[in-house]
Amino acid sequence: MSHPRPAPTARRARHTAAALAGAAVLLTATAPAALAADPDDPSSDALFGAADPQFDGVWRQSIALLAQDAAGYAPADEAVDWLLGQQCADGSFLSFRADVSAPCDDVTAADSNATALAVQALAALGGHDEAVSSGLTWLTGVQNEDGGWSYNPGGATDADSTGVVVGAFAAAGEDPAEVVRDGNSPFDALAGLQLGCDAPAEERGAFAWQPDETTGELFASDLATVDAVLASYGSGLLVAPESVTAAPVAPLDCDGNGDEAEETGEADEAEETDEADEAAGEDASAPRVASASAGAARLAGLLADGEQHLVSVPPGGEEQPDYATTARAVIALSAGGHEEARQGALEWLGEHHGEWPDLANSPASLGMLVLAAHAGDVSPEDFGGADLIEQLNALGPAPDETPGGADGAADADASDDDSGAGALTWVLAVGLIAGIAIGVVLSLRARARRTGDPA
Image 1 (cartoon, rainbow, N blue to C red):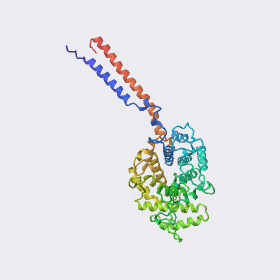
Image 2: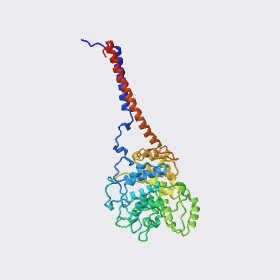
Image 3: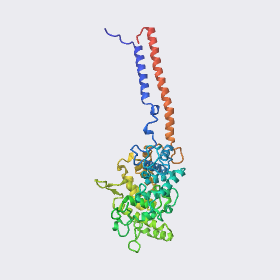
């Protein structure tokens, strides 16, 4: 027995109901995610980056905030609050605290680098005087007798840790030279790590990370040289290009007759250096500036000989470009006003930063590039054709304010508002369409019953 074919009216009712119901399902499926947003979703965290923050949470957050600030963006309150929440009661920071409600009982776990960089970020943002002062007090308390700092309290001084701590005091508007322990300042500690005229000619002016534990010999380190040069110029990672006067580098005078300044074709500017030295007179900062310039000369030589970038060799690996240290070298050279020495490296980064492994997922790497672009007076929003700020912002909370004073999270807020208003619109639309579908079906079925047309 064959079933009777539905009459046209019934078919129309079913097709109409199916179409409207389908539209309702489609609208529901494509409705804004905010409709089903989970407030505990880890993606809503205020920490930049999705990688495990165990070893670099505070460091990468601080760099991200510094970078946004350098580019004229006001970081999101929740991102700043995250960083503030990581600070221990004694003013120090660990690399990362998974449970900020637990006290920081082990002082040896405190991280001088994380503390110093957090201070740099909070000082730059302003309005966090108590946190900045507390961090500097802790750093002063763990200063070594030679005037420097180790990574964790109680260790031997190293150039990298000393450099980033100097940057913290400088960022807070304090003179690092006045931070003294047993008569030694941080610059005394750094001077003890610089290779002098007894080193091979190509290594003179470089800095070592630490003396060899057995022999006390100094071995040149590119990263240590970068950090020591930046510190010796009295600067942190945030370098305002307009605040620095152009100057050539001046290598160590190992002949006793004054080597000419060398900076890839700017020897003709040596007269400027002589005038600067004469103006310095008995200035107490003159020795450290000379030390910084000698280190900068070493960096300029390395860059010129290495196709405008520094290199590194991972354990068991092959030599490869060192993007991070090259970016920091641009910042250090910019701090000394060495425009010509840094320009080639800045341009190399602009051309090759896309080859930096996992750059797009690293707030610290993107942030360091933003800071290098800022120091080099180049827009980070058009760096080698890439918008570094857009990439950085995608890894964390949207900034609250954009350059020019506009409400920075204007777009994000507008998006949120639109999402809220849009969500309501979607709900109403879905309900209306579903209601219409049901109404049409009931109406047509009633009509069918009246006419004897099975529905």
